[in-house]
Length: 440
Image 1 (cartoon, one colour):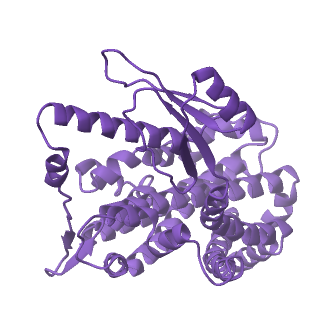
Image 2 (cartoon, helix red, strand yellow):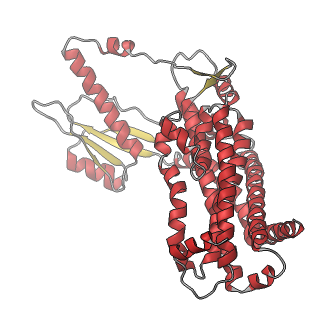
Image 3 (cartoon, rainbow, N blue to C red):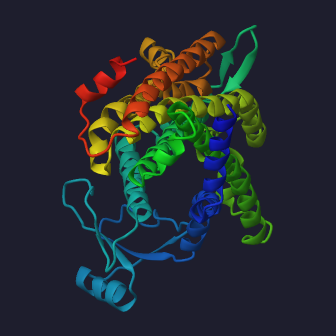
């Protein structure tokens, strides 16, 4: 046991002291913070560049209908098309919206001229205004007041409650739960592959450099494999916690420093509630203050279960797959030989990510439940289901099966590792590995 602890310590310290670990630990949170800060910052900066649109409306239907927006200014001209192109586009550098006169048909066609590609916001706004005006005129022609249609439109505020064990009711939000589900599942998938690849690479490096021959003379192959796996697992947890702390720190620095203590409006909406919440609560006549609603939704999320589950399923999934990666690294001599073994091992994890759509739409279905029980798919699948609320018995069943799966894969991997780690210059096949597994 002492030898295993020494290997764990060696693997952990040798990796956390590397420049690449330190750089990625700092760079990762910086990039995460930037993905939240920069879109809002750049959106505010881009709004400073306004587009001017000259409107040449030969029909007269849309006179004074196009109103100035945050980054779009409209003005009306009354020359012919060629003169308008010369004045608006070539001299002023503006966009030209031309709505040609029609004799019998409704003016549903328009042409937008510019020297640059107009933004999506410009084309969308123009289509919306024209569509609304034409629909209103059609209603009036049929003797229907458009205001009656408008007043008939109703916004429905649907509040969802999840009744948990014991009859406790908690307010929930499907959009938030979907976001947490996808984020948690993708992060588990990412971490398992990232640190599992380190186990594979580390074993192959030691084998190819013949260092393993010296190490094996002092420790058992199983102790070496377990020490390497657990050591790298601790490296992963360390980096994960540092990313959380540093991301929060960088966000605080950026918000107080770059924006002079204030946050741009669109960033504040994202930071306080998330885009999906902001969109879901932007309804008319809503009786509850937005921030209070957000607070209730956040309070409805069991973060203790989320955090504990993430740590457990990361460790369980990593240990399970890392043992298989270590076995592959011990069995082969070259990187090219790993591909034939990596694909079958990785397929269950990749399949669980591919089933994201099914899981988030039907988290309580039989398929989602069984995928969260199978050890090879449970790390990703169960983490996707937990934000929606999962019965405790299912979590415990999944956890026990994952532990048993790790023990079984570790036992099998140890048999492969013990034989393959000292074998050189031989192409390993599945038949050869099967012989190693049958040997006592």
